Length: 337
Image 1 (cartoon, helix red, strand yellow):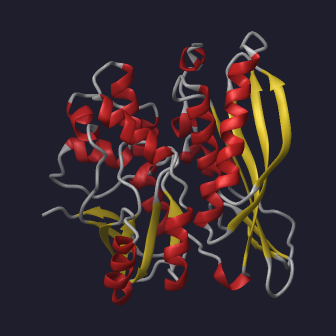
Image 2 (cartoon, rainbow, N blue to C red):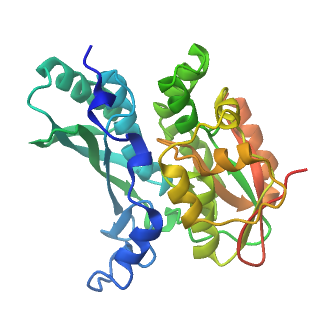
């Protein structure tokens, strides 16, 4: 089998541009004012949202990256999941997707075909249609999707709406980057690697469906900036302080961190999102800064809804961890007992 990861310097969401540099790049760049542009760059979110009428708005996003695994079908599913999840993170439902692809002409056509076929299958699983795309020649493979979805204008989930008194939840454990890096060094157990792949190929559709009736104040999906980076964004844009009290980890993730394994996104995420973490073990910091690919939803909702939300997730056999709370102030704090 062709080794896709041997053709790239870094894959998955760890390949994201530095969040700090991206903020600087986009500073002052605001689209032409449009009354119906409900979510754009001021502030930026997981996707853009454009109002069509009183009952419908379009959610539009794009996401692509180099391979993080060698199996082309698994790569296609992960890349598709990561892009589709942006729509779910806004409270929307995917409708249509287009492939964004770059591959060396030297790659066998069946390898490229496996990426496309797996992505198309995942798009169908999300209830959408893969309707075409654009492919160019590039020595470093890259794949992803542009996705259009729909949402009710009153049902948008911004990352900027967290309020003091909210409870914070996460719908997937952390550590995909650490486990994959450990596997690359042949230090990950087969079961840990398989669990990481399962997490990255699980759409956030079912979690979003359960969450929707609870009208959360703020939601974002945890991807390349790590939990700490995305919590930093939520806190800063909501004008609140986020207190993290526990970090759920995939099997093997903390062991990889203790062994000194780090991913390429780790130093960039630490630069972007400094946190108050006096006395926190370094392996927990590495877990929180680890660049996730197709991660779970980070949810902020009124604390009086917390027990009901947990019960609904438990009844459906879905993962949910209460990771902290929202208080007055600013920044992100770790407060482990």
